[in-house]
Image 1 (cartoon, rainbow, N blue to C red):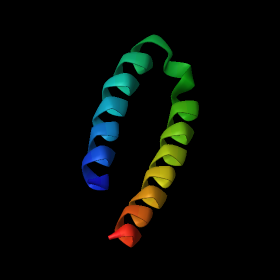
Image 2 (image 1 turned 135 degrees about the horizontal axis):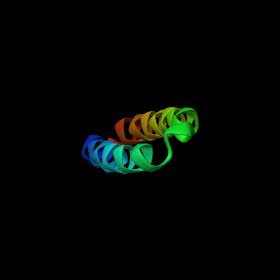
Image 3 (image 1 turned 180 degrees about the horizontal axis):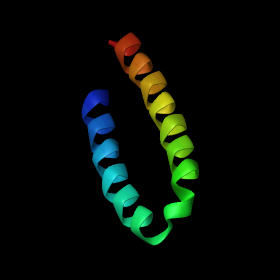
Amino acid sequence: MGVIIFNYVVVLYNIFYTKVKKIYPVQEKILNSFYASLSIFMIMNLDKFANNR
């Protein structure tokens, strides 16, 4: 279940990222750091999902 949610978030992020990148090319570093923190958060949640089973 957690993997499906993670993939969904990644797809949403990629759509959001490409749209924002066209408008604000300067914000790329901020978006990359946001994406890194988001992926770390999701990986921590995946560990929780695995432990709950």
